Image 1 (cartoon, rainbow, N blue to C red):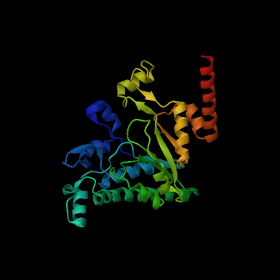
Image 2: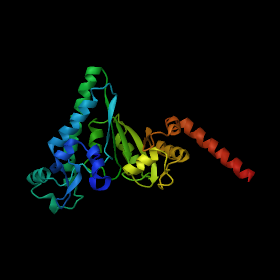
Image 3: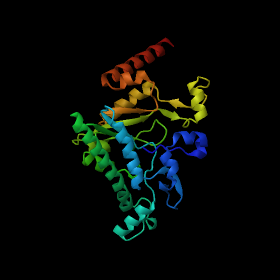
Image 4: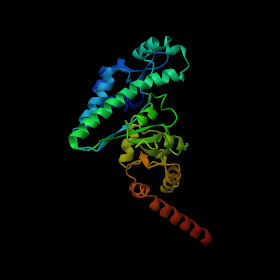
Length: 290
C-alpha cells in the first residue's frame, strides 16, 4: 500500500519508473519523522494521499474482481509526525505528541483513526461495487503482528467493525519467523473475518537490486550466489500444521510466486500430513540403508 522507491538506493532511473507521478509532484506529502525530516513514504495523514490511493482502488473495481488485498507490509509506516496530525492532537489533548514517548497509546490510537477512516472509505467503495454485482467484495489485509499500531493500523478495530474479511498476520522482515497466533484468533473468532499466517518465503539475503533481479531472471546468477534461501516445502508444511493448530484458517505466501508444489499442498491439511509422513518414511529408509 506504500511501495515507494528510494532513489538513493535503487537509482534515479529506476525510481523514476517505479514511483508514480503523484509521488514526484508531491514530495511535501511524505511521512515526517519525530525530528521533522521527510521520509520516503507518502503519509495518509494528508487527504490528497488517501484520495490518490482510493482512486487506484476505484480503477481496480472497474474489473470483475472478487475483492482486493491491501498489503500494509509494503511498506510501513503510513503515518508519522505530520503537521496536521500534530495540530489536531494538540487541540484534543492539550499537549504536543513531540513531548510524549513514541509509544504513548493516546498518540498511536489517535493516528490510527486516520487509517480506520480510510478503511471505512475502502469498505464503502467495495460495498457499492458489490451491490451492483450482487455479491460481497472481500477485503484482505496483511500487517505486522507486533508493530501494526505503531505503523498506524488499528487491526482490532477493523475486525470489530467488519471492515475486513481476511486478516493476514505476518512480520516486516525476512522469513522463518514465529510468533503466537492465538491472540489474533481471539480477535477474529466469531467475527466472520478469516485468519491467515503470512509466510515470507525468503529467509536470508536482501531485496534484489534491479541489476540482480535482471540477472536472476536471465539465469545468469543463482539465488545461492546471492546468499538467498527460501523456505523448503518441508518447512512450509511443518509450519503450516503449527499455524492450523493455533487456529489459522489458512496460509498466505509471499515472495514465492512460482512454487507450484507449495500451492498444491498447503491448502489441504490432509495433503500436508501425507507429505510429511512420506518425508519421514524416506528419511527412515535412508537411515536404515546407511
